[in-house]
Image 1 (cartoon, rainbow, N blue to C red):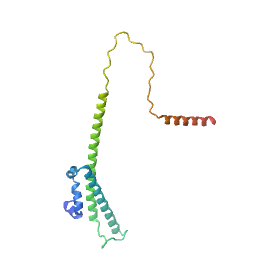
Image 2: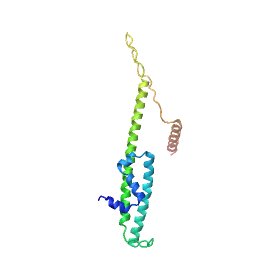
Image 3: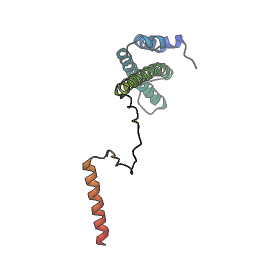
Image 4: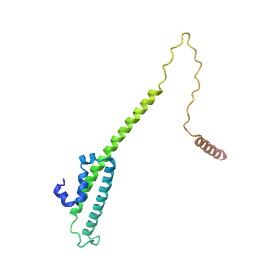
Length: 173
């Protein structure tokens, strides 16, 4: 169910109305990243406060907690409404934060790809020289292919020692 402006005016304080107004799509997009994070932090604290008040009032209504304040709570509709409004505003801001994160990640990816392309183009070697005329040399077997070992020596030694211990155990049986 949509919440009307009249309900918002009744449920929120002036400072909370400002925060909710700043959480609108157009307003949130005009904010800088630091302003957006500050707004999210302030709105989250307001939402958490409204949540605890609503929970306390619900407990009072059910008789699980003693009433706090001058008069006991008769209903928690206003607190629930405030919590819904602030949660919706926080959801909008979280969506904007996620959108900015995706844009930044995409820009970083493009920059990284351009850098890799530049390095690849820089590393291209000159063309291979033309073949020499005459008979081709006979190939007598394969040459030794060196494979780079990515396992550090410290790990290799410990594994070798572990295998030796296991074999000694088997031999001792």
